[in-house]
Length: 329
Image (cartoon, rainbow, N blue to C red; front, side, top):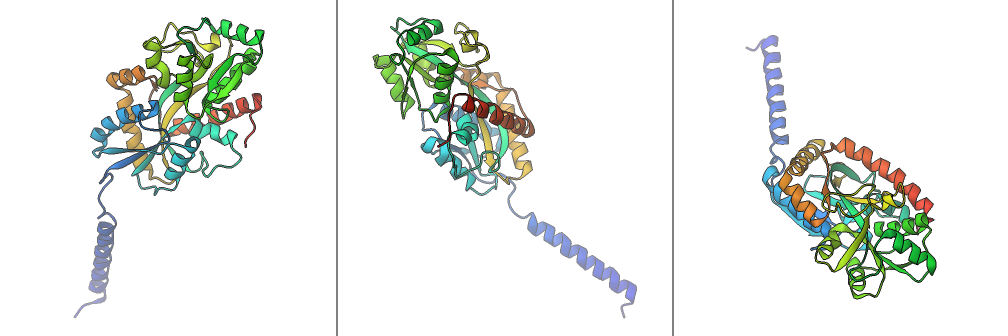
């Protein structure tokens, strides 16, 4: 016959066994990652960001232990790709390889967005700075930024400065250049920077604002000439090209590339991805490959540091949008 003490001991043991069984069930799922991971881009295959994402994903596949699938979703000025990631489950199997436009400037260019850059994504890692440049054709008589400004002032509205349109990061750079240089350039918007590049080479436009990743190889081939980069200082790999800030003090408009996840993605997964990306960025071989394309590998940042940077960029670029009179539409 079971006494009361024995009964309670058995009851406690049964409870512990049940709890243990619950723990086993709860942890019976395969550990992350157990299948391929998707990396969404808002740019087409073959673009500068696409090239960097593929470099990064090759190394991450080895360190994380699963292949990374690049999912290009261009269009809608980054909205299509960003919205797709926002709507994805926060399970660690979808990440967004994002640009400055997607995570910051779209907030100041559009009255409504189907996503909130600061609320709908979890910061994972800062990847690279992606400087832009002011370019002219290889045979252009314009040799310096000063030449460009003087010519634009001499006949306001005649000199054409191609860009991706006012509601893009490159378009903001073109407007800021016009405002701070007090230039009179005619800003010609293109729906595709590739078309603008071809028109510059063909002589249909006088100058162009575009990212170094999209134009660097053409400059090296002698098909166009770089007058200045839009970073506050000269950049590695282009040491002979002045910074625009050397002519316009304080000019600082550098795009960047980063990885974010859907909001709610578990912190341990974010931390592991951050460690994997930072480990890749510390490898000189990857930094050299990235620099050959254009972007400059960034020093490692924690998710918290990247979050602070992101919020600071919102404030800084929001003020620039006001300065150039770019109202959201």
